[in-house]
Image 1: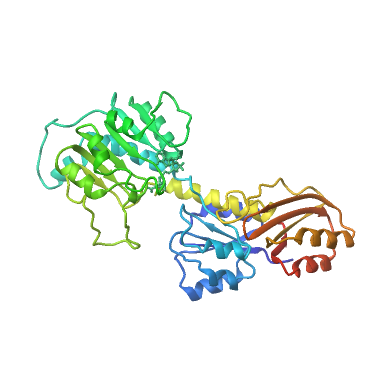
Image 2: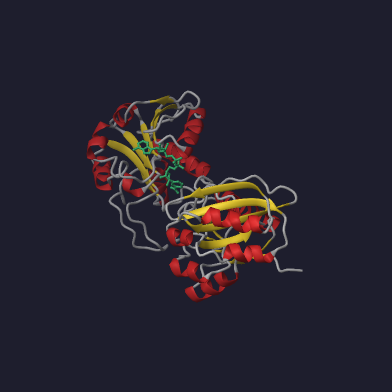
Length: 403
Ligand code: NAI
């Protein structure tokens, strides 16, 4: 019996990843930490798929030397740790899980809305230090207050539902047209939102349009005593301007989970202009860091890897032509062929198949600038020379028969 293919999962990826990969025929090996470059090279040399989180870097050399590697799963949100264009040029799709921690961020934001409105962190710190201060000054309920959500995507819209359930009035601003959920009200501009919100929370991506989107001018538009929460991306808020607005008493509180420059490693020495200011919650980019999110990410990425292996589906891959395919039909073989995007390749493939007397039942093709991905569902055949012929075409980057 042939050996099952190997899936190597590094950096303590949640074991919920195992079942989808095993169902697709993989043997799963877990590596607790991020391996050093020597250990990584030997893992890549034997793996068919690898899973990494944020610490394991996969530069170009990893792909040029890993001839059996079919796909990479980033079991996290970001994919900066992988050289995506090199992976694509060697025919390796890379998958991630951008939305599995949506609920975790929404819940943390909701917790901060209440905690800041009641000044819970300040009260707690004072009591830890021995000071009993039972005053109700500046402590507010959130019921009936207006929450302004900037960016009504996955997180913003989920938060909208939770906040309405608490009795908050929800308004939002998004540059894209978005369907309001529940009774949330769409506003035409950021300024309109800042003018009327008691609490403003940011859920936008990092882009040219969002960098420093909250600075001195915008803070001056916020209601006196309002609260600002940024659990999105660090460069969206001008922290010096925010610190000034908090110190002057113009704003009554803030929370920041993300910062313009974040340390790569845990440990002391972090500095921010917000440090030490009253009623400010600082957290080290943990908005999406929950057990549930890790489990959901594990299942999501493992299923994407399994679908790619079994059917050739690359939908949602971050670096590859996107193909979403049905199951291979009974009695057929599915050839997955990645090649350089130049004229004439399909013609050559058709000719090779026709000469071998093999009928093509379905063909799918997607290309990006440099790479084409063609999938052919053909009659079952045992002729290895046909596969060798397809493999040896000058334009072929990578080729296999699915699953
Ligand atoms: P998403 O892509 O679903 O939603 C973003 C929304 O922002 C979209 O509806 C988009 O149209 C809107 N948008 C873009 N530019 C805008 C602008 N200039 N003004 C107003 N709206 C704008 O993203 P998702 O999943 O909701 O994530 C939101 C942010 O949260 C992202 O930056 C993401 O990186 C971050 N995030 C932070 C985490 C943490 O641990 N703190 C964890 C997960 C996500």
